[in-house]
Length: 161
Image (cartoon, rainbow, N blue to C red):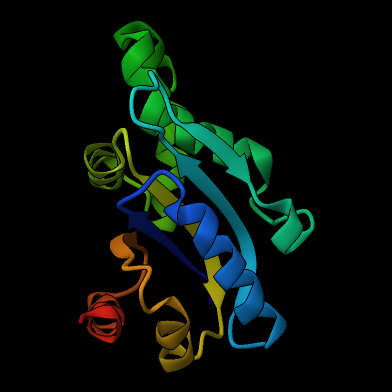
């Protein structure tokens, strides 16, 4: 089963730096990356820059439409207004099946702000202790995951310093 996780970094380039780490882990077969995208929000910018990471996954199973819809719901719909937001409500409902609900959207929206970045990644088969070692010093914060509560707590404890 694949897991969707969102990692926040306290700099606008932190997620991009994490991509290099993730690539190394994937090459060593310490994690399987099914799909990934980054959000980088430079201080002073009106909106974040989003990027699907085709270089990590080829054409990911989720695809650009998924990332576009997700990032639109999180970052751009609040800027456009309630009328368009209501029209996308039905589309957003389809995301609930993979653990993306209003709470997820609110968490990400509240935490990924100007001056920060985030890595959204769909993975499986992670060797958690090796992943933790590789990300030491980058200090990612787990915002959300579609893991069970026990799995999420185990993951948080691996990254707790």
